[in-house]
Image (cartoon, rainbow over all chains, first blue to last red; front, side, top):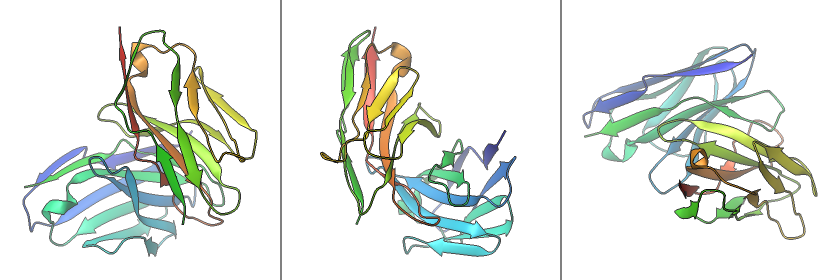
Length: 112
Length: 113
């Protein structure tokens, strides 16, 4: 069966510091991968998606970036965090061509 | 563009009460529709889905029917339990490729014993 991992689970970072969140998927090959952010009272917002290694599509302009160095690894980064980057970050995967997405446990990021 | 509208709550019910959470959508074409559930501090879990008009998705006593004529996908459960307390998200997928899901803002459900 497939599983999806995210780490760290919780992170507290000062404004202006860098960020690296990692997501890995097991039990499938060549999945579509997604990063969403959940801000308080605002539902879920798609940030990035990827259909393959090195292929990243951005949905929202921001100071975040994403990379996919391996087939089942998806990384969310920032060079300098802003207060507005605080939120709950969720990684998801789906089979190529399918409509259903499966979510990881999330990372709670607080920027102070 | 696509959008999903759902009651935000919080919705507070007593145990064994009947639950309805309304969800309506706007989308081009024929989207797939989903309900996800989020327990405190956790990620989203797929609860149920429906892919075409008049389909009924069901799981763990919850059900929702894809109503194209009213563009709705209301979530129902006949008798809720305290353990059903969570945030419920309605979502749609209308992409042909790797597009993301479009979510409603979530409905916080509180079940009191």
